[in-house]
Length: 196
Image 1 (cartoon, one colour):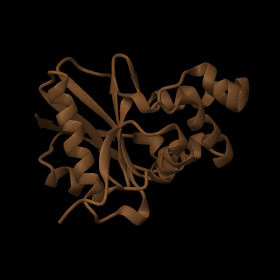
Image 2: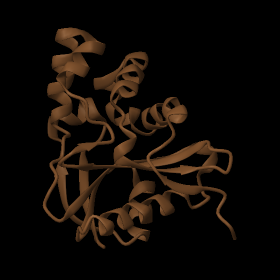
Image 3: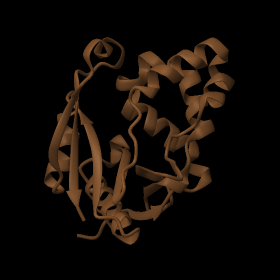
């Protein structure tokens, strides 16, 4: 069966609002308490989302169906800094949010591509978009001469974990959120890796 989508580097600028909304739908359960209200979160994401650190799945007519972000020493799909937070949330709100989100920040490692989120539009689920994006991320790692891909999956997202396991990712460690579970809505994150 022929795929009804194609994988491309990043996403067209015309699809930026779609990328922002898809990201927020996928991660608002995890980030909503800290990044809300939604209107400000969307404004922040629109300001910082960088297609240079993503692979997109586009429909034949150019609609964004899904996105897989990654992080390198040069940047990330959603990077932004304190100045971006302050520009959207004000000095106090931006500073507090920046400090809290810093807890979730993951550092890059030598010889490893850090996957920084994957999300698929609801209407495109079950069509192989997520699997194709994962394979494209692994191909991206190989093209960069890296040995493995790393990602983290939270305990409240068993569907994503199952997708990663089907794609050959193995759990290597687990980190508990402790008292921050109240803010982020999950109690642990499992680090998974795949050799490419």
